[in-house]
Length: 269
Image (tube, rainbow, N blue to C red; front, side, top):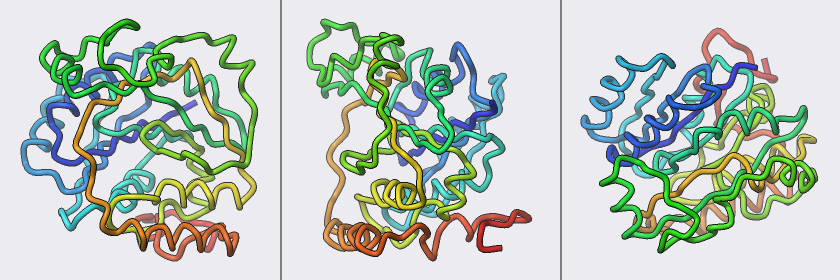
């Protein structure tokens, strides 16, 4: 199965370098890596070009102008450009373990999307990881949150696999879905400007369209490096968009991936 790994980033080349290094060193490599760049400076573009030149896995850099937090739009650019049947989303400060892509592919199910988990690395731990070139923290390393998510137990992960219709706690920092399903709901809603809820609203529309959610525990592990909290001045407006999708049981948004598809029809034709 062809899988496109979509890495969302913004002005964090030190972390992105570790993420891309890990992404190109997978036990099962993705078909391609798409860097969805929400307006980073030239250092990020130079990094991606340098790493792409030495990578056996194709790496593409999809950049948009910096007009504030527009993760929905840059993810749509990547969805439109993706050639894989399956889309795996990860943030540019989430360092995946070597089995990350393989685990996601093992857990892929028709009609389902996947919510993965993360290990939170504190500020001092993040400085150490960056200094050591991405060496994974151990189970007993100091300053970790959700350290149980370090453990990998494929059998237990399958036992705990129960599809649900909950949209609680959706985070696309570790998330996967079928490309056809993403296009059917018109991708991410580009009405979202500013941090927050664009990933939950995307999941709500997938659920309204009949998809089911799978939570992965003890597989598809990744380390979330520390960063300052994003500004949340648009959160109330974004909450309103999310609630509208819930109450009106929306399956599509008006401004989504259709704005970026070329030579490819979405479900609206």
